[in-house]
Every structure is written in C-alpha cells, then in structure tokens.
Image 1 (tube, rainbow, N blue to C red):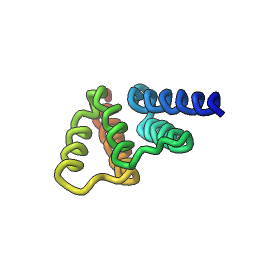
Image 2 (cartoon, rainbow, N blue to C red):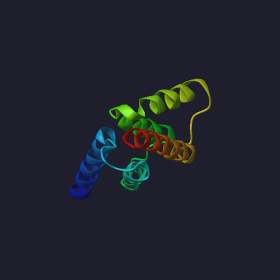
Image 3 (cartoon, helix red, strand yellow):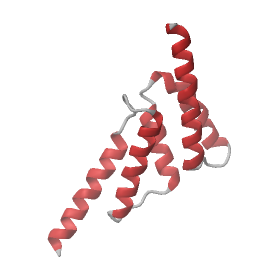
Amino acid sequence: MESFSAQSRARQIQLRSAIGNAGKGDLSAAAYFTKMKGLADELAAAGRPLDEDDVVSHIIQGLMHEPEYSGFVSAVSTCTITDQPIRLSELFLLLLAAESRIVAHTSSYSA
C-alpha cells in the first residue's frame, strides 16, 4: 500500500509541476487550453483537484511568456481582480477570440 501511495504522490507532484510550467508555445489556443484542462483533470484523478480559479490562473500564467497575448493576459487578469472570477468556459471563448484577432492582425501585416 505504501508503494502505491508513494507512486500516487510522485504523480501528483509531476502533474503539479507540469501544469505550473506549461506554456502555449507553438500550440493553437484550443490545443493549449485542452492540454491545461487535461493536466488539471489528471491531477483531480490523482486525488489533488485544483479549483477552477487555479486552473484559470495556470492558463493565464502560461500565456504570460507569449508577447502577442500580453494584452489578453492584462485584460483577463484585470477582470479576475475587479469582477467576478472568469469561468473556464468563458476563458476558452475569450482565448479563441484573442487568437483570431492575433491571426488576423499577423496576416494583415504579412500580406
């Protein structure tokens, strides 16, 4: 039983590290969101669920290293401080909209 407990704890630590260090990189907005939500779901299955606000925070944190998302990060961070917390479903829609604007803006400069 101790061996299983140690493995479970090691998995929890690994997942917490992965979600805390994950960045968007070359992933699409949808793929990045899905990756982060998947890590949160795995963590919950391992016995250490994160609340929704923590998942939102990790997603935003992962976008902070992406210069094209700086306006999005600022706006969403401001909303979470001044208004009611943003739900994951809302964050997903806002993230997709931000990506669309970034793609449109980028393609207008490269044309």
